[in-house]
Structures are given as structure tokens and as C-alpha cells.
Image 1: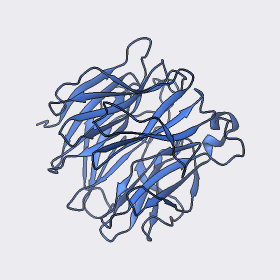
Image 2: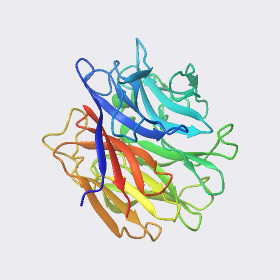
Image 3: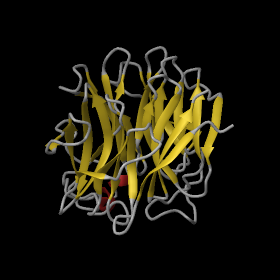
Image 4: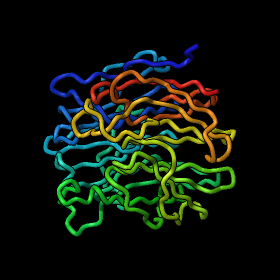
Length: 340
């Protein structure tokens, strides 16, 4: 019997039909929020902005969208939303609508996203970088994976124009003081395209990074044996990937959860604009042997269309993964996946 939960969070409507880069978070007061990008008819576009929808009934229904950050003359997208001690920090990439003049900043809210600080430059990674999901290690460090195209002298150039979007470098920042200061790892790569990465911890303290590499049909893997300061070169895995972000979590019992599109087809005739891949089906895989094998594999949905960019949280009671994804770049969907 299907025990999963699902609901419509947001539907893009003209003139702002696009949706992408959604993240579900559970606030300290129990309210749920999904933060996402909308605005305009595609991404990237100068009209792109960051919005938020709320649920007070654990995802059964969602209130109308609120604007989080919107510029008149440039685009902005979120790449991570991190909650710590009641402060919600959103990592923002702003650009000219085509990833030119790409700058990284943060905004913060201490009242559940009802008000936000002005953007502050994120100095450790100031330009041409996407920050990814921060992993809090069992030894207390914050491990921030990132993908960067900051490999040229002129930051005003778009990676789409100079070709550097095909040469993504990956790395991590590590903080031992809860984000006040950061130290950087070596950078590994290059990988092709929008090489989103995720980091998770194994039972022996090793860290594993999985990363997308466009047009390859698979995820790539790296390991760190010194708590994220140094990463080995990427190696291909046998995990299929159609050029799409995947999401990792570590459960309290040590199992590793992966939500992704297990499909190696990197093109599809019905792909949406600038997607160029077959992001279907959407599945949950679980490993109980430190990612050596994936003994539990379940298709969550293979509803026709593009099911992309899942991000969310593990339920504090451990029985669910709650996340949001975009359907065909015009709907944001909530999904609660029941864990075995």
C-alpha cells in the first residue's frame, strides 16, 4: 500500500511560470516552509526571484507564496537554506539573468522567514559558485560542499559564454565554530555542467561526496579521510543519473538515504527548456553498508514528465523523508517518503 504523502505547494502562473531549486525545512515552532525560485518563464532569467510557501498542517496544505528576495535589475536563486538555533540562512546567487556578474551572498531570518536581512556578501566563496547542503558531522564540524566556476580572471563573464560551465570544480568549506569562520579544502574535478554535489558521513568517519556530471549518465564519487579538508579525485559510480541534482541524508541508525532519478538517459524529446535530460523516475535508495550497496530501492513516482531537484529533511522521529521537487519546471510538489 502506498503510504507516502504528497501535495501541491505552488503552481507557476503567467507571467511567472517557472519553478526550480526548492528546499523544504521544518522550523522550530513546527511550521513547514518550502523556499524556491520562481519568476519569468525559464531559468536563468533576470525575472527569477526567491519565494516561500508555508504549511501549518505538516504539508497537507500550503499558503500563498511570499517574496523572500527579488531584484528589479537582476536575477537571484537560492542554493542552500540552512537552519541553526532558530536562524534560517539562505545562500543566494545573484546574476544578470545569464549567470554573468555572478555573486554569492547570504540573507537571514530569525522569525521563520517573515522578515529578512539585507544580502551580505559570502566572502569565503564570493563569486561564480553554488553553495550546496551543509552537513553537520557527528564530531561537530559543518561541512559545506560547493561547485565553482570561479576559474577565470573576469567574474563578469558568464560561464555559459566562456565555456567554463563544462569545467566545474568541487570542494568543501569546513567550519569548527558554527559558521563564524571557514577553511577550504582542495578542489577536485573538473566535472561537466552543473555539477551539484552532496556530502554524507560513513560509520568510520569518512566523508563521501556524490556529484552530478552532465552528459555522462552517472554520478561521480570522492572520499575524504581527514574530515573534509582533503578530497580524493572523482571516480565514476554505477549510480545512474540523467544530469540532475541528487540528495543524500544520514539517518541516526547509520543508514544512508539517496533521493534521485535512477536513469542514465541524458536527453529526452520532451525535455524542458535548458533541461536537456530525462529526469524520471524519482526514487529512494537506502544503503545499510556505508554505500557499498543499495539494498532498498523504491520508485516513488514515474508520473510522466520531469521530476527534479529534490531537497528536504529527515523527520525528527526518523520515519519519513520530507522533501520538495519541481515538476516540469512549473509546479512545486511536496512528497513525504515513508522509510522502511
